[in-house]
Image (cartoon, rainbow, N blue to C red):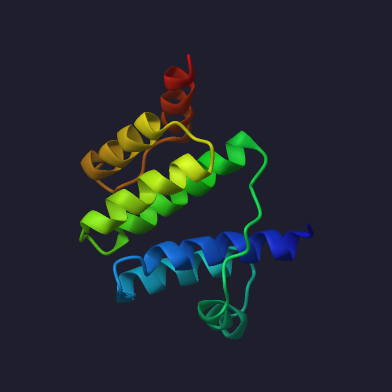
Length: 133
């Protein structure tokens, strides 16, 4: 898969997750747009992604799966409203990604407690590695 397709897939997954509560909050859109800019995806291409289906391709590398899960967890908190179906969806996504659901739950809790919702990369990796042992 080429880099553009990988970037597109990551954004599609995040878009699908952002609408799991039935609507797209303005802060969620802004967060997604910032990520699209970082991935060098233009606004027109970004907006087109909202009308596409999510491909069913697995992310093979564990580090990439952890990073993508973290992005989704951040997105879940970007509108400052935690819906019950978002919490359920993030757990199901972690399982589908082959990540430990207990680690996923702990990451979500750490994000909720963090002052700016960000947790350091080493802490994130440690959470998943400790639960694996």
